[in-house]
Length: 250
Image (cartoon, rainbow, N blue to C red; front, top):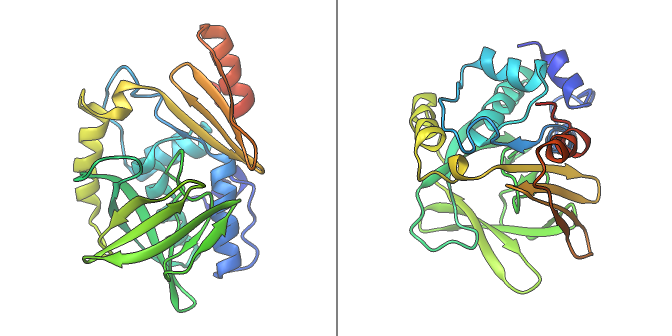
């Protein structure tokens, strides 16, 4: 992997070596520079390659985004190259959903400075917009509040919304093999019941909030203020929006 090209893509020089501040900077820089997006498969399911060279070409060379199986794998490989002690795990998305939920998400766990950390750059929408410590303590990340707990053998991440504390994701804290993610990726990129093949989902963090495009609904979600949204149905207007707000030239 060309580490310097990757760091240039996310505008992060990683000057602090292997440390919590450096990892926090890497996660946040990635979220701001590389959008979550499923535009390759939305409305037209097709195989998504998880080979390292294909992911690097798509995200770093062609400056695209990707969904969790792409972004979190490539970021995991970067962290390994930088010397971090990390491993991937498979998670369940629980936010505003009725259990039981299937495994549908890839996360990266980092062991660093006596703690475990969730370094997730592949969860669009309500996920943590930065590095999350898995120590059970309440944490504020980019103006949003999260906490963690181990429940019935699974690590659970909670999101503290203004009206309610909700379960966000859960996972068994154990390494997964890459071949198992190939199976999950195959289902979610090809099956007609997959949310990723049913609708376009594009998210990108900004310093004071997030941009989101869900099919033809574009919204700007700012910290401490109501979301502003509009419908973008014209193909040319949508193309310009993807370029201006998400850095996607497709």
